Image (cartoon, rainbow, N blue to C red):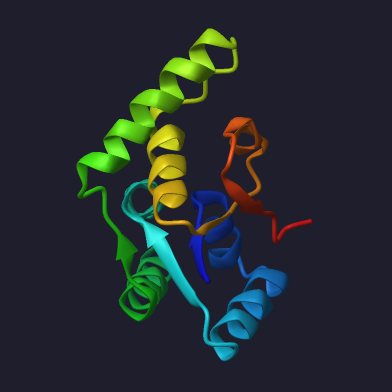
Length: 133
């Protein structure tokens, strides 16, 4: 199984959340994979650079080297994102474009999205876990 970490989970880890750190260690020990979505990478990195958080930037860079990124590199992801956007808009439950792309790539790759963002519950068929609960 592959777990995709959302921005809020990475931020909690960077703030020293022991529960997140323990979950990451235990997932890694069991042989499952952890990755970061490219959009989440951008969201975290821009925030760290804006805050000039040099220590956290070094930790984040090492973390990303260890676990790697998932990229938005296939037409299928954008097809799914377009479908999700249209359906959520028709239901009056639209979420932001970045989250639609994160959800689409995670869903297409049959991964579990680890997030504290309840908006992702609106995406039918997306597997979600919240490690902050």
